Length: 465
Image (cartoon, rainbow, N blue to C red; front, side, top):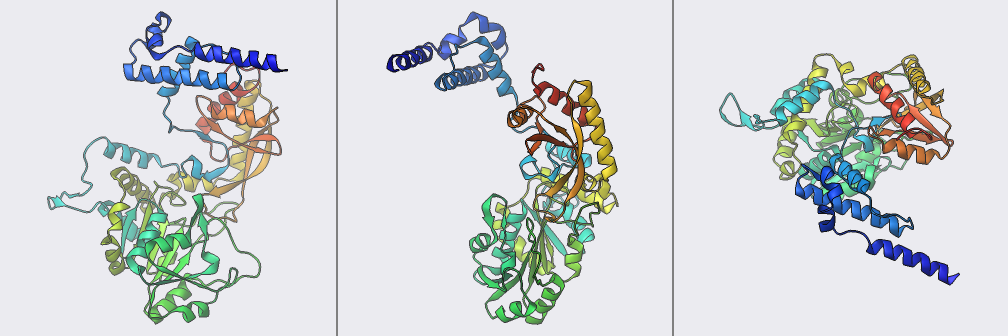
């Protein structure tokens, strides 16, 4: 058994030693047409990548010599952006891994226009002097939420950190044990509170917290009464909770501000089959919350942002905190958010893709799935249309179960099939259920169905790549 192994290792080592150097490849005549017109720095990077990939395959036991096609593949890989569009066939609307909310065309156009040149991001055109980067959205947020003032930072976790640091550093924050959540990526509310310098005071139990629990915890060191949206889970069964209105009443009685971390941040009720009720930002403000933080890229359907609205005196303190500058948003975020908010102001929430995707009827989705099935059949791919259940995603509406339809493919090695779908020219992201490939149509536009069908056909066994 020993000699064959040595022979194998010897063959592998010989192939590794035979790998050409970068200089040899740069002088190889057969590569001249491929590298013609390619900047030298990119050509060198492509050659290194090609050699590294061949070396990795040799080390894995594949017997392969270096081919010019390896350089062609490396050049194509370098020319492909790492961050690029994908087609979402998962049925999860606010898919965190896929960029959450798709932007409205108006928001995309506004951001592109502002990004192409200079803008009055922090310049007051009327006064001819420095202005506020929040100015384009503050008026809209006041109008849409009923709050006295607003500011915008880079995301909702940053907004929560900033609010706690500005209003409660060195003081106590009273929060229900049932609201000490962990959000995506392992970030936990108690950890965020500690980083802000606030001292956490837990009240109630995991499943039951009463107003008297909050009242009993308020003292001279209390800086905030905090209510946290549970986002990605729900408590059911033997439970009791304190609404923001009752908590706001206690806060006024005790002279302690109430901070509502609302998380998802719907500006208007989102109505659709399978959706659960969500506390909207205007309702939280009207109920008496002194400060409310919410996301721009979840149910609001805009760019990633953390939005803070509330009483002007408290917002002024938050704006003055040093963290505000560290967490500030860029010009394209401000532009996209302004355009998104204008759609709500104009009574056009259905123009926001997130709102529209969540409100789709099962009949509409069933018809779309059958159209995809027909497009697949035209390309020789058999599928069946099944009723499935999707999700809102992004930690919003954890109890919601969205009725949808999908094209289901019974293929050999479904995980490898999904990998080929992801690796296509237009990546398609599906999911697997009970050993079958599921392509939910909820997040697929009509004009994307043909691209999905072509990607599926290319990934199918016996089909050309």
